[in-house]
Length: 481
Image (cartoon, rainbow, N blue to C red; front, side, top):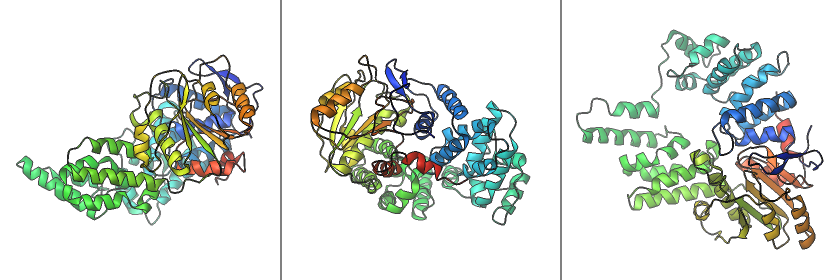
C-alpha cells in the first residue's frame, strides 16, 4: 500500500501544463480523480482523458482498495458519475472475488445509480457480469415503492424496468408490489414536486391563472416540505418570482442545520444560488434570501476543525484556475470558497499567487460568501516558488489550493520550500489540495500531503493527518465489503 509521504526519488514527471512535477502514488492519484472529478471537461484535460487515466490506475492499484475508494467517494463525498465509471471498469478485474457482489450493492446509493452504471457498462464494456447483476439485484432491497417510482427513468436509454429485467431482483415486502407494477408498466409516479409544477399550468386560459396555480403549488410544496434541500436551492429564483408569500418558510428551511447536514450539497452550490438571486430586484425579499444563504454556508462550516498554531492558506489564481467552461465546477469557484471557509474558521493568513505571490487581508467577520466573492482572479502563470519566497513567518501548516499545474521555474519548488524552512526556522505540515484531480504534485517531501475534494470530511481528515500520515487511505480501508 502506498504512503502519503513519498520521496522525490523516481517520482519526477511533466504535468499537463508542460512544467516539472512529481508523480503521486497510484492510490493517491486514484483518490484525487475520485474526489474531484465530475466527469466533465476541464482546462487541461477532457473527460475521456480523465477516464483513460482512471482505467490505467484501476489496472495497477489493489482492486479491493479501488472498490473501497469508490464506495467512500460515493457515500461520503457524494460523487456520482466518476464512481459509476469505476464500478464498470473494475468489473474487468474482480470476477470471482468473494466481495464483488457486495461492492456493487454498496456503490448504489440511489436507484438511478443502477441505471447509470449499467448504461455506461453496456456502452463501453459490453455484457453485464454476474457479480454486477447480483450486487445490483441485492441493492433493490433498500428501496421502497416511492424511491423506485421516483427514479423510473422513463426518458432514459436504460430505464429502471430494464435494470429489473437484466438483474432479476428478488422482491422484498417493501418493494414487491412496486417491482411487479414496474414490470407491467403500471407503476405510477408519486406526486413529486416536479410533476405538480408541470401539471399546474395545464388547462389555464390566461397567464394570470397560470401564475396563480404555480404560486399555489409552490406554497403547498414548501409548507408540506415536499421539496428537497438541493431542489430548494436550485429553484430560489422561481420561488421568489412566483410565490414571494412563502419566503419566510423558505428561509427557515434554507437555514435548518439538520437539513444542511443531510443534504450532501457541495458548498459551492450556494454560490450558484447566491448569484442567481442577486440578479433579482425584489428588494427586501432578495436581501433576506441572500442573508439566509450566507447563514446556510456559515452553518455548513461549523464542524471545520480549529487547528492549533499559525495557518497559511494559499490560493492559485492563475489562468488555468480561472476557466469558465465547467461553470460552478471551475477550480477558481471551489478554491475561493474553500479559502473563505478556512480563513473564517481558523483566522488564517492568506496568500494569492500566479506569476508572483502576495499576502491579502480579509475581514473574517464577513460571511463566507462575502469573503469568497471578494477574491479576484487573473490570468498568469503558476509559480509555486513564489509562495515560499513570499511567506515571511513561521507557520504550523500551509494549505495550498491549486490545480497543481506549475510550470514557472526549471525545477519543482522543493529547494525553495527547504530554503523557506531554513530561513524562518519552520517545519510546517503542507496540505496540497488538487482541485481538479490532474494527478501530479509539486513537493514530495516529509509532512506534505496531497488531498482532494471539498467536504467537511476533508477537514476532519486534515486534523487527523497531523497525527496519522496514512489517515485517508486508512479511512478508505475501513469501508466494509
